[in-house]
Length: 295
Length: 295
Image (cartoon, rainbow over all chains, first blue to last red):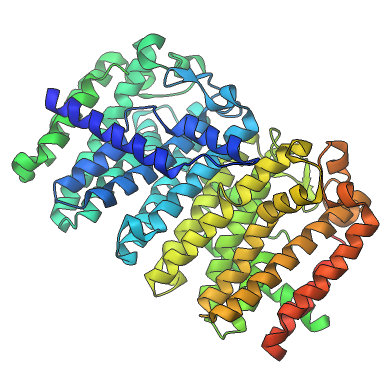
């Protein structure tokens, strides 16, 4: 795993540097807006989504610049979703990645607008020729990201999450909610790497299945950490789902059965990588990382 | 003007029908999200931005389907901006287009997410081949819309607007704020029509100047209506800028000097159309409509 951790760290640094360059500090009244965007976007998180894009693309020797820009766009969307999710009218969270949430550090209006601007920036990045010389490829990435992020993807998942147990409190309802809320963007992160790498249909299918399993396992571990974790490790409020009457994998299945499913999904995810041989090594190790993470 | 009014009405109907088709009602937990998107997006407003796209493109005999899809994407962005602008942490408005604002009719979280989903949908629409067969053109439209809507465009204008008189209370500061807040998207609405119509550089320059003048005149009339209008006519709360200590053209210049400037901008906007001869007729009449409007 030490090589894996080095690669994960390297990807996170490249994403931070990329976002730093993409968000230059302006003069004038909108300086505060960009400061807020930078506060939320730079120097936080594991950068798991751009990591997936980078490492999936590397399996097919795709151009690193194209992968990184696409990864930065995905991270902008992920960051925007966290900002809006933390707002008082949503989860009303004070803590994110071990720091004050954006609306606590700045104010609600600035947080709302910084989220809006990050979402918009993601599409601007993807539309520019620097992301890929072929405009057809850029349009594919934009349409894919929009679908993953929008009303039939992540936003639909957030609506279902806010609805709490109104969506049903069985495994099917919770699985569906999480496939939308976190799964759709993780899927796209992997698929974007495969798309930029011009993977074959069979390869893309295997990677989509991998992403599906990894996304669910990731969310189950999140729910376990929320139920059992401590604030110091996770850098955010814990036990909040139960306190808010929300349903998640642990409230539906219990901790033991959730852990069992995480193990099954991890094995299954790795099997989908079999056809790639040694090329699939990093994505293979990513499964262990996700399953074993403490935050 | 009667022909103009008929054309404006026809464009609004086509945009409504377009958005109605683009927002089909789903089953399941996200049905409420789409209902909220539909509530805000369909059947409201003058559709002035898509009207500009349609009529500018028609000057160059551009394909109506391409123009309409682009206009619908622009209207999605405009609608999202109104939804987020009306939220309690922003302007906290109860009334919009004569009805309850979205967060009043639904709830704050749903309004936030419906805005997010409409912004995302705009880019999805533009990325799809149905918007234009040439992906290079689609990328140009996406980059243009993102720039107009984002941190160096509309969102920057909203930040400046929220900052009130901190941005300065002189004409330069107010003009700059409005060029960002409303001007950028109106500019793009005209420019998108010219781009799809493959207008020459000289034609695009003239139209950009036209859009600039029209955008400022539009905002000045808005500020005059806010200062003098009645709720029945405008369909939204009035006198709110003054009550909130916000700066606008009327608070800075006074009503008479603002009206004078509206007249000057209207004449100037029409002069930019001179080179188009009779082809510029509808955009010419649009100036009068904007200057004379009561809501």
